[in-house]
Length: 145
Image 1 (cartoon, one colour):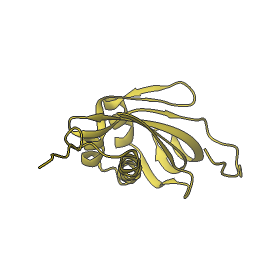
Image 2 (tube, helix red, strand yellow):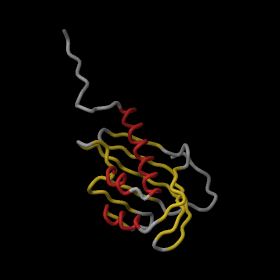
Image 3 (cartoon, helix red, strand yellow):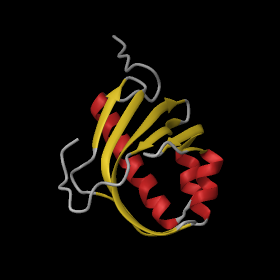
Image 4 (spheres, rainbow, N blue to C red):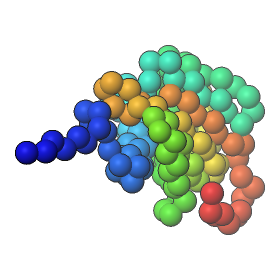
């Protein structure tokens, strides 16, 4: 009788990884929109960093502090704009995002591109690094990433 080895426990195919990370990123965006810090906390890597288009850097706690005083009307990826690229234990998500709401500096309504980097950990995929573009000019058509 032969044995079949499927690789390390929990290992998935690249396509399974792409689907899992894509779903996780959409779940994260929805959690931000609802100010659901429990879901954000579960998805974010302990060493998470966000770099905005103007160079502002937020660590995990700085992000939470900012999000606690932000209310979103919109926090949605443009349908069909999301691309997930998997490189072993790292995945990069790019998508076009529309955000609208009120934050510490007042109301905002802008569309931007982002790149979110996820890393595979012992407890699953974690959102470790993000970079957001400056706001796109009004009316700019969606371009495939």
